[in-house]
Amino acid sequence: MSTADKATDLQALHAAPELLRVVNVWDAITAKVVSDIPGTKALATASHGIAASRGYEDGENIPRDEMIAEVGLIARQTSLPVSADLEAGYGDPGGTVARAIGVGIVGANLEDQMKPLADAVKAVEAAVAAAQKEGVDFVLNARTDAFLKVSDPSEALEEAIERGRAYLDAGASNFFVPGKLDESQWGELVSALGERKVNMIGIPGSISQEAAQRIGLARISFGPWSQNTALTALAELAERAYDGGGLAEGVRKLN
Image 1 (spheres, rainbow, N blue to C red):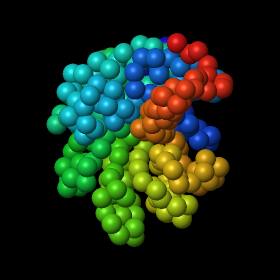
Image 2: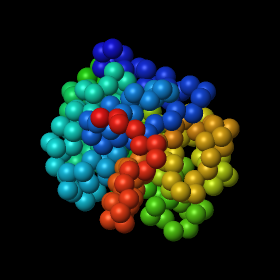
Image 3: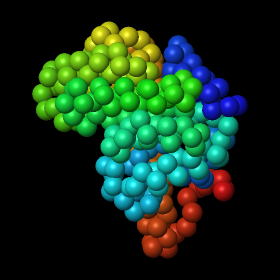
């Protein structure tokens, strides 16, 4: 499948009635393992996971060249569409999206970091324009940090709705709201922005996939929690080994 075809496929997966389930990956072997699991329809990277695996703190501390190289390596491991977490675009959202498309990426998260709304909208517009110039129906997942940075839940919801409308109007395909929202809050977002337009992250205490499907969310991904799951297993192996034990039952050889 060409890059353009993968982008079209990813758009269709987000618009489909069934909730899109995406397990985030951070390097070549995790991309291969997740791709080979029956039921995997698309991959997504997590900027936190990629940065951590290379010794950087999250938050655009990893150089853009390294991030683009890593997401390109991931895209080469699979025939499935891959969406990349490109943080806030590294000061050049249009250029960053164009470079990502050049290495086979067909969708991206773009953070607003709660910048002034006008500036955040310009970033979305630049990313959308870059994808259009490349001739790719790119899945731009515009992210707001409203529920992470606004302490009052009602104010956070109001802010998220305003930003979601602005980003979708600017050409974003979907709207991503990390945070631990309840069913009522997700329902209000979907009511305001439309079904199959809002994406969530699966975190401890988040709503169930059944509820997300019923409410009309488009996608659930797991961000850094997929890496934390793997690291938990590694830490537990070390703990058992130091206590005189060994491998846990059921460990599979996947590489």
